[in-house]
Length: 206
Image (cartoon, rainbow, N blue to C red; front, side, top):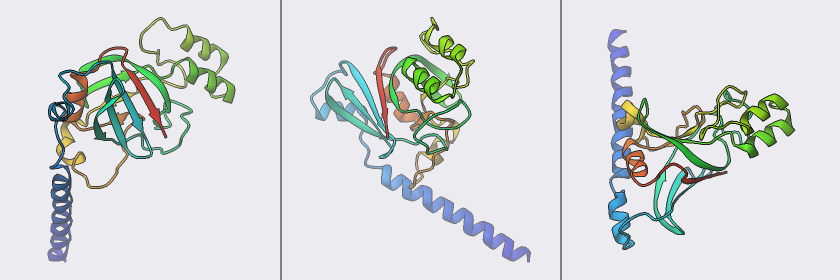
């Protein structure tokens, strides 16, 4: 009996190691941001812009209108198109700006976006997800980043993976695990944070 249990455990471990090894092979051809810029004869990223496509699981970094590099992403656990509350684990869709940059985050680094913005608040009010009072709290907030004390919450953005980066970034399949934020590898968030700034445009589509 014990022998069978050990055999099953060993099989699972070998399978998992195989998955990671396969993921490493798939990711081995990825070029760095520096190399991507060199191929395009760019010395710096001018007017950085981020376009995120939930359907293709990609984050694209632009310098003006020039696509510089594309990154593999994962999203919130809930695949719904519409975010209704802070707890629904849905990645919001819309146009945003980076409002805060945290270089010492539990997920390595965090580029917070200004979700919920006035458009999100207006849509949520129309659908009955928030009250008129909550709507006014959001639109009248004087902070760069929205307050989090409404049903829609806040603290959504782009972050790394953190201490389990070696595992999650090399999975050869899609595994959505975040609270609604957009997750990329630690190396990728390092590259993004080196070229974006407060106010950088971020668009999330489905």
